[in-house]
Length: 288
Image 1 (spheres, helix red, strand yellow):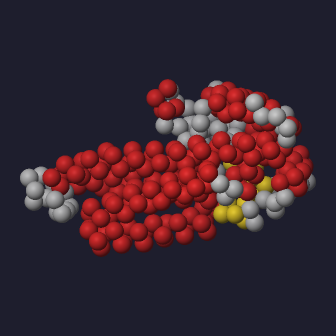
Image 2 (cartoon, rainbow, N blue to C red; image 1 turned 180 degrees about the vertical axis):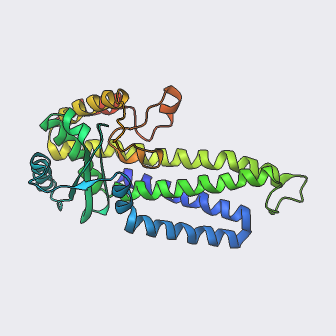
């Protein structure tokens, strides 16, 4: 409940940031337009995000005959969790990772890459899929998609502000106050995307910790998920893409169980995922 309240507040903050940008550019009318735009984006994310993501990664739905172990694991976990069975997909990629998508438990999907199926043991895959089902059960898949969409729009509008500052502004409310409008545009171009990113990171990281705990509770094997996270962290950092592999991108990196994008120490500070070592430490401290 505490995490959900925090997430709701952060989503409201993202929407509010978008509305404030609308107010800067267009006053009351701009606020109304930005708010309506946010509602439309949320509606689109609610209904179509799962289809878009699955198509983006060329995920193929597989039957129990095509992937018996994968279905066997999911069948056992949904029974323990008391939730509907999601559709099961495989992504042809050597990148060892997995994700879940869908607006609710009745309309959800879990996807695993061929790389993760080759890397992890049966029990480690149980831990991973339990984590993903926890995201579905708690509707994190919908929340993270909406957050990413709103953050993307805020960043896009900040880019407009950047170009407006370069070419003399949009004739905003402060343009006649000794260049105050230009200064405001520059500040917005820098601060708005940073604020949006930090809010999105706070949402994503809190949901990952919650999904780890819930996933461990579902499978009753926190050590298996901990072992899987360690293997996946190593596997993704040493992964070398093949020409045929589907590649992850920044807009959807938050969906995967571990961050699929490589980066140094600075980039890790702005990662959509908590530090793997901390996730593992918390899981190994759990007892059932």
